[in-house]
Amino acid sequence: MFDKQNPAETMAHTGTRKFKRVLLKLSGEALREIGSQDNISPPIVESIASQIKAAHQTGLEIALVVGGGNFWRGVSASNRGMDRATADYMGMLATVMNSLAVQSMLEAMDVPTRVQSAIKMDNVAEQFIRRKAMRHLELGRVVIFAAGTGNPFFTTDTTAALRASEIGADVVLKATKVDGIYDSDPNKNPDAVRFERIGFHEALTRQLKVMDATAFSLCQENNMPIVVFSMNEPDNIRKALIGETIGTIVTDEA
Image (tube, rainbow, N blue to C red; front, side, top):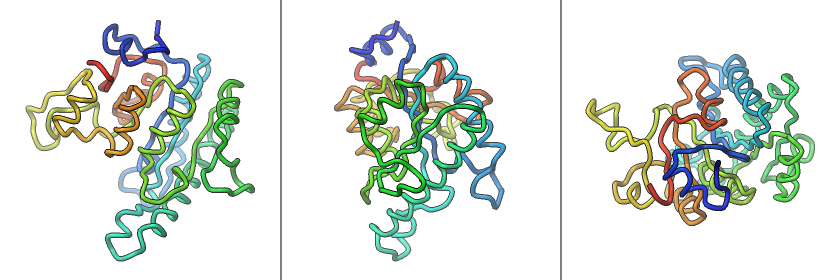
């Protein structure tokens, strides 16, 4: 069984991944078809939603954070001369659009869903309230956290780490383009070795880019395990959600 009181120890020493409540982090780029001019691909969103639905039907409590990179990247815009805070607020609005797209698809599949925004916008989403979000999860609703933390200079990775800690999630599941964490860049080094599990301290020592520094520190300080996995493989999101052994686990003890 998954020990909610000490999730990192359970995952490190038994390999068990039996979750009650999870936070799934998706990039905005995950919603876009490679090579397409469309920012959001309905078939891709449908595939993601169907996998979330399958995991949700097991009784799992699921929260999501979706990035906005398919529409806008605040850091890139600021590097081209735009005020950084303004650029980041625009990126937060992009995450709201993506969250609404995922919500629409989930509800078309009869999965009750709520979008909670860190920026007040009553006509399209609830305002983020921690206790209300937890109650939604307890009632079997998928909760999507939009608009980042509501503050500039923070990434959606940080949002994922923060919200996961706030709602008492068992784990952060980070969907990426690679199938885990490697000791070097697998795209540049064919001999790169993938870790099945690694500790926070070792990941820091090796300077492995699991998440941005703020997000990683939040997870480490709150003993929040991270599972990094590839979403490019069919059904991997569902597998990660229900606890199948895929990707790399980052825990307090490895």
